[in-house]
Length: 167
Image 1 (cartoon, rainbow, N blue to C red):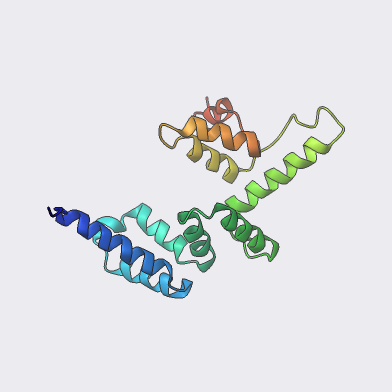
Image 2 (cartoon, one colour; image 1 turned 180 degrees about the horizontal axis):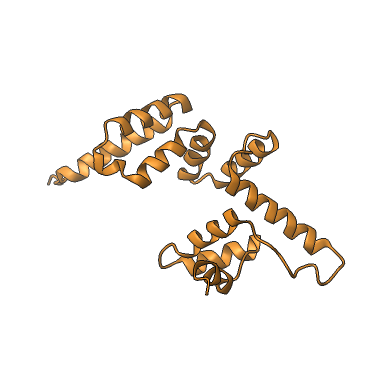
């Protein structure tokens, strides 16, 4: 008795095999393939958000971190970001540097002997924008927001509402 395999399943297996082979290529060749795909992609893929993402992925620093995150190598991605920050390569990425500054400020406030040091925190605009986007992203956003703010510290949802709707 032979087993019937639908055509779409064969095509998916072939695409998976192609992606595995592509992942084994060196980073430069992967980037070239990525750029070529974007060049010949339909215009529906080249909307405003897509163009912004493509512009950011054309940066070799971000492309390397992005590919690591896509593969589930989050520890390697964050270590790569740390290495880039230590080398001074991330100075033009305002949001990232603002997140790092807030993390450093939080550590300083937690280790300070003044028990009132935790009050009066001022968050940079890029940091507030980052958390606004994080909080407004789909059905799981409250859970994600809770996890991130417990680790990083951040503005309360009430503060974010007041920033979005100044009365």
